[in-house]
Length: 528
Image 1 (cartoon, one colour):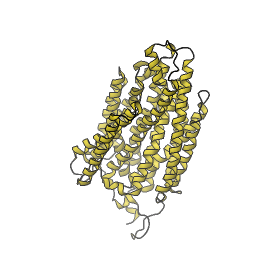
Image 2: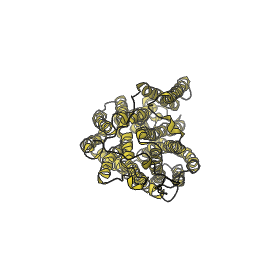
Image 3: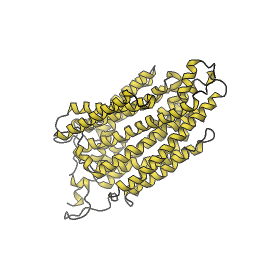
Image 4: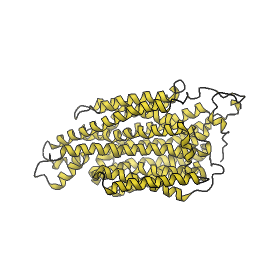
C-alpha cells in the first residue's frame, strides 16, 4: 500500500488539537492550583490529615475508577459527544466545589469532578489517535497533548497564586467554567465525531465490576496509611483483587468487552502502561510534599510558591514536546531510561533538602523529576495508543489515563502517608504539657494542622514541626529515588524492542519493513 493513501492532518485537525488541549490544560491547572490552595483551605475547613489526603486524591481515584467505563462508552455513543457532556458536567460541578462549606462537602465535590473528568481525558486522546493517522504527526500531536498538561501545571501556580492573593480559595475551581463554555462552542466546529463501528452493546455489569475492583483497593491503601494492616485493610484489598479477577474473566468471554484484555498481549502496550504507572507514583507524592514544603516550611505566599513551581513545570513542558522528536533518532526505551535517570538525581536532591534555605535545591530537584515525567507521559502514551486499533482507541486511551491518574493518586497516598508517619513519629511526645488537647491533636496529626494552630502552640514549637515535616519529605524522596532508578533500568530492558518513531517507511509492495500502524488500520473518515 502506498503512503500516498494516508490522510495527513491539515489545518482543521491542528485546530481541533488546540480545542482538545483545552480540557487537558484545565486538568493540569487543577492539580497545581489545589496544592497551592491547601493552606487557605485547611485554615477555613480545618480538615483532618486523612481528610486532606481525600481532598487531594478523591478526584484522581474516581477518575481512575471511571476511565475504563467512559473510554468504552465514548467508543459507543461518540467520542466528541462524550467530551462535550463531560465538559458541561465539569463546569457545573466546579461551582459547588468552589463554595464548599465543609471538608466532607469538598471531598464529595472532588469525587464528582473526578467522574466528570473521566469523560474528558480518554475522549481527547482517542480523538487525537483518530485525527492524526501519520505516525510522526500522531507522535507530535500526543506530545503537544501531554505538553498541554504541563502548560496547565505551569500556569496553575501563577494564575492560582494571583487568585488566592485577591479571592477566597474556592475561586480556583471556577477557572473550569469559562474553559468548559469555550470547548462546548468550539468542539462541534473543529472536532469530528467518531463512533466505533460494530461496537456492540454496553455491558453495565462490567462497569460495576470495574468499580468494585478498584474502589476497595483504594480504601485498603487509605486505611493502611492510617491504621496499618488491620482486618478491614486486608479485607478491602482481597475484595478488590477478587473482583478484578472476575472482571478480567468476564471481559475474556464477552464479544464486546468493556476492556479488551487482548491488548495486554502486546508487549509494547503492557510495558508502556507499567512505566507510566510506576513513574507517576513518585511524581504524585513529590507534588504534594514540595508544595507543602514551600508554603508551610519556607513560609512562601501562594504567589511566591506558584512562581517557584513554574520552572519545574516548564521542564516537563520541554520534555513532553522534545522527547517525541528525539525518539525519531533514538529508541524510545533509551529516551525514557535516560530521562528517568535524571529524575533519580532530582529525587536525591530532594532527599537532601533541609528545613531552611532549601528553595533553590527543591526547584532544581523537582525540575529534574518533571523532566522524566514529561518524557514518559508523551512517549508512553504514544506507544499505548499506537498499539491499539482505532475502534479500541477509547479503551486504550482510558487504560493510559487510568494508570497515570492511579499512579498520581497512589503517590499522594503512599508517599504522602509515609511522610506523615515520619512527621508523627518525630513530634510524638514533643508537644509541651499544658497545650490544649485539641491543639495538640491537630498539630500532631499533620504539618498543615500545626500551621493552622501555630498561634496557639508554645513559642518555638512550630520550628520542631518544620524539622519533622522535612524529615518526612527526605524519607519519601529517598524511597522515590530508589524506585525510579530501578524503573529507568527496567524501561531500557522492556522497551528495547521498540524502534525509533517513524524510522522506516512502509514499502509499496507490502514487503519487509516497518508498516505504519495507522495506514494498516485504514483511513479515518469525518462524521459530523
